[in-house]
Image (tube, rainbow, N blue to C red; front, side):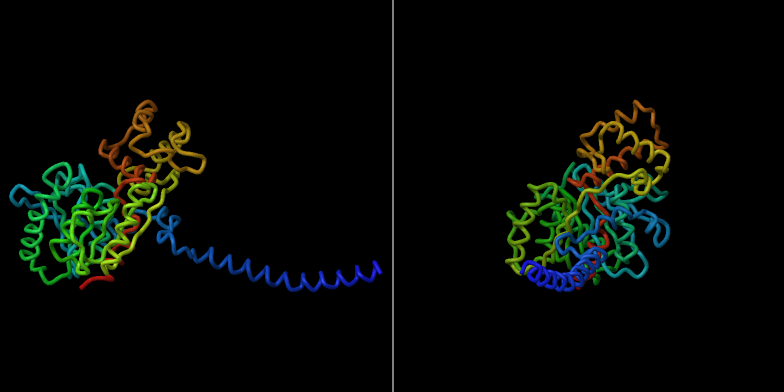
Length: 348
């Protein structure tokens, strides 16, 4: 009986294995396809893709900086119009920022500084045939009481002067500029807007279904801001406003990361800095920063190691890229393609 029963169960086990093996192969094949395609609806940004983004994708290949600087009632206005523009983009900087941060230094703009992330956003805009208008705030940050009407007048004056009044108007603001754009959008017509590392001021304005489509570009590591953005997404959605979000995640540093992203920084210095960061424990074993770039004493460590930069302005560039890699609160160009896809999908 024992042998007979054993033969019976052995036959069943063999049959089960004959079914199980093809099923297992099918499941593994499906998982492989999902991994290759990168299917992840919750995270709209592929970090492996953005990590490898290089400035050379835009620098010099498709567009060139050629800005015009003007002052209107002591307010600095810097702009550039590509051939055959299809839309106008207004850009609002964050606190301590200026319009000059978005443009490389040139004979037309000797005081421009071209911060890495800001300049790449402008290059993407120009490549996509967006006329770009940047304005400097009067103070350290944008005033939500006094400056909306000032900027509205500037935008209207400029589009009429350039004969662009028939083009759709979009806006992108970061941090203080994000709050400002969310307020501005309640006072003038935009086809769509992008709020970067800002939840907007929706507790201070009346929202209707005429409010422009809005995309939030934020860093969920800032959990308090993420919660407010979640609330405002629902507030806008309930009022019939088309809304979306892009989550920007932290990035690992590599030996070439800073050389890839900072104009004028060569690979040798990038490698030296990365080795220094590892030695000092500023990054973990996987290359992720242990703290915000504004907090870790990387400048002091660099000075003690006698690592010299060809241009002191590069310190600010490196600072911005370290903040970007930590992904708590910083301007980012890594999601430019998605942002401009959003703009283009809502041009009207």
